[in-house]
Length: 302
Image 1 (cartoon, rainbow, N blue to C red):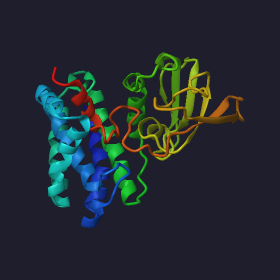
Image 2 (image 1 turned 90 degrees about the vertical axis):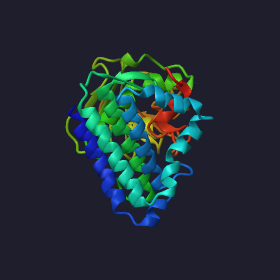
Image 3 (image 1 turned 30 degrees about the vertical axis):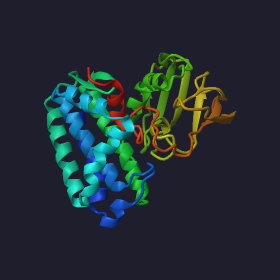
Image 4 (image 1 turned 180 degrees about the horizontal axis):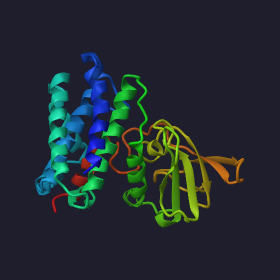
């Protein structure tokens, strides 16, 4: 699958960062409560190993271990515990080996093959996309810990796509109603380097949101990371003053003003200042809930 090359490219970005860190920098705290850089990389290694089990059809064993844990949080902590007794070099070698085995297994799949994971079976291509999103999300924590600005690439389009597709699931998990059917929403995202916007949803949808894909204030962070407020332009009722857009946790529309081009209201769809450990997509950065494996723990064996 071509997307595996993009997954490897995203992993290489984080690899380059952490490989150059001093041992004490691996112990710097990240925005995830109780986690340092080493924990973040350990988490990626452990999740890649579990993902490989699912790709190889051994998902029942993964679900059984997750279901046997006291809670998703306990399962998530158990996954990273081996890394806490390892040196940075050993943790990095662990992640490299785990992700390489996973990539090789993904390359053998057809994009339409089904992989059982978390919320249920998903296409292999979507499964690989989820791995990109998770590496990117945890990578942002590592970049933040060492105060290095992350590079913004067109790979963010995969994060945007998955964030859009995951909205119904996110609202369902949060126990909140969708403000409108997803088919009524169109999102146009400006790529980091400019150019033709990335579009998600029907072109003739009555609700439309446009904005940036920048990893600081853009749509990916808004939907997956709940970071600082984001200026977005909308038409229609999708983000109204009472909407829960772009994630299901709270009212985040903070006022409006008239636009200069078509008089569409410009709303500031903010997010709680890095609401740590939570993910609007139910898996990108849900640290204390066991991240993606929190869903496995809640689901239990099939």
